[in-house]
Amino acid sequence: MDTGDRLLTPGEVAALFRVDPKTVTRWAAAGRIGSIRTPGGHRRFRESEVRALLEGEGMLDEVDESIANRPRNAGPATPSGPGPASAGNVGLH
Image (cartoon, rainbow, N blue to C red; front, side, top):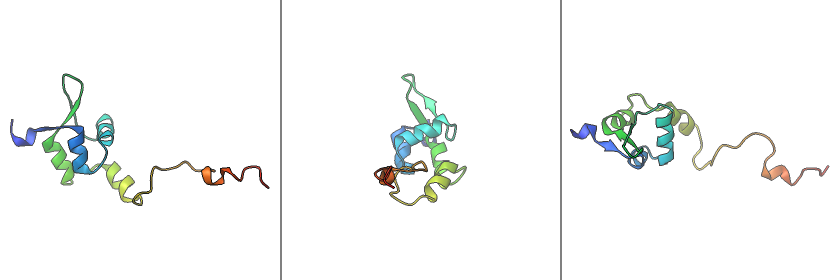
């Protein structure tokens, strides 16, 4: 097996993309990145495919759109409507 076919764990891929390992697993489940299952059921990723994605060949749309347009440290998106800040004002008219 040559170095381009080395198999990476979700944690190793996550470190390269600077995302959480669960995000890598979600990308694989959605078909955004190919994965191989070990006999024990764990996901592994071909290093050559990961490197190609990092170099821009088929960059993940999710990375481009959701991260690039979101302010840093914004936290998770919240649903529209009254939130905790306005909850205390309910019924006070």
